[in-house]
Image (tube, rainbow, N blue to C red):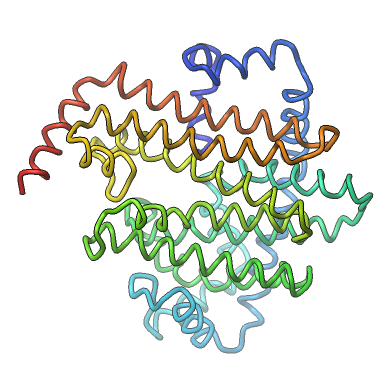
Length: 378
């Protein structure tokens, strides 16, 4: 989901899905779920600019204090798997480093990376998760809160420039700058998370490695280096569950049992959104993404309508596990109603795009069926 999807939460569109109608009812009643959702949304809006400034200043300081930018770049490439598409030549590193001594240039690059607004939408979720834990533990430590939220938001934001580099579908003139910035984004995230303690940092490191594995499997499936099987597709979804699931664990400073509950809720909600993304991408790109659940189910059944219907069911399976996590929280847990409302928005997002495709885009379904026939006939 991104802020570009805001229109799907307009009243006319909320009325078109079961989850959307539940959202409307909650809003009309102004019940606890809706009130808490609005509260954390407004709180995060007030604090967002402070986060952005800390992010910009941190990256600028790391770049300008780095005595060995070439080695920094090489270590990053080795850590993410020697991906040639992300690598710069030595002369490129030195040239960009020279330009990046300008504070305004660094700040502009961070603004460009943040313009997808994914971080802005994730901020209130992390804010609420941390606040639920802090309230339970009577914890009041602003720096601790900033480090845990900032560190994981910045780590998540690393996916944005990396995706733009690999997809080459926007900001083409800035891709080399993004390649230069990537190591410092990861360094800043690690710097903030390391301050929280070794257990939390180790959990982050393990989640980061898992997410990279998910991306690697996704790439191998896309290039047909691996067969499109159920197990391989589930493994590729590590790219969703490891990122948000690990962040969920650490929003309560990796303290069990809450860390496990948060992990299940966030990991499964992220996987559910992944299914909705694949349906939306099929509409936007006029083709079924490879790899994806719609493609997997369509190939197995020989029918794209069944493929998308089963993908929606898969999204509900993931989301039902996220709801199970909520049942493990005490009834008086401060942010439980917020999470219930959050999961309703995930359900509506998935249902909306499924309905948009099946009810309003018959020509696309016909195209997808023809494309599938070509694939199966090979």
